[in-house]
Image (cartoon, rainbow, N blue to C red; front, side, top):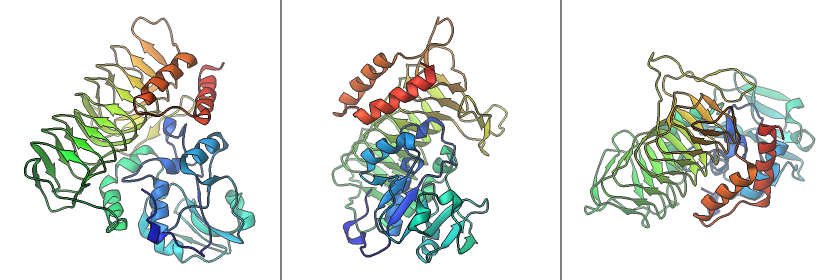
Length: 413
């Protein structure tokens, strides 16, 4: 969701959004910066831009994703704007209530969280390229929410959607649910784009949060949508789907079965029956029919997650957490994922037993295999091109180069 035209202010110091690399997102940031992760109706970056009222003049990211970020955002990347000072904002910022404090900053002033992490500052030009070593005239500590892991995004979907609706009120068209499409109830906002098609016999429950249905969305008959939730542009909800609370289905996805507490980044497919709960799904993921995941331990204890092979277990602080599915992961029919499973970018799972809690990038898991195997890169790209062609798109040169580098590192070849 872009900054509305009447809010693109001019004559203000440039906005620079930076990824400080302190978040732990596993494979979800293999192909993007942390601020490109979906939070609600838009990405974290788009939410920051909308709240501040102008687009970022530059973005600061890890060099590994520099070309991809520039390609996907159209912004200057790792280039300091030619201005005396810039407003720099941490790209993991989720809490938009602090925007008034950020907007009031003067040159040399900064805001940090309780851990000393830079939240925002007005930095002289010489400091922008090296914020980690910057010295500020004054620093204030504030209470603020930064995204440290995927579950920080999914756990606040209700609050995020409420903020998004307030920011963009008056800038979107909407209609009500028609009687021939089904029934709706609840006191919260129900916003349906006029181009969306629903029903018949659909149910929208806005008792505990808003329900947003975007442009060109199709909701098949007998589906149930429970707020807070959003189904975004061009997505399709299958017949008899149960879309439970705290779910955001990103643009151009196909979703069916039972889904709750999940963010789909975009362009992913879970059309068939099966349960997916408290998870984050990247782009170009295919989830086969009858696939189920667990999002609660039998002991009802805290879920621990392994995000990288060379790192220890990460505490989620939550009893409910399911899976992280990296971009281009493929799960065959009947796949079972245990609580806290992380599936790496490009992995292919086609085995009858549940995989380990960490599936490496480009892993090739099949019944009867002797030892670990990897998806051959040429076959992987062939599969990726085939899936992307179904959505009338194709991998760019920059994307293929980044995937090749990730594959080489994962397979040490």
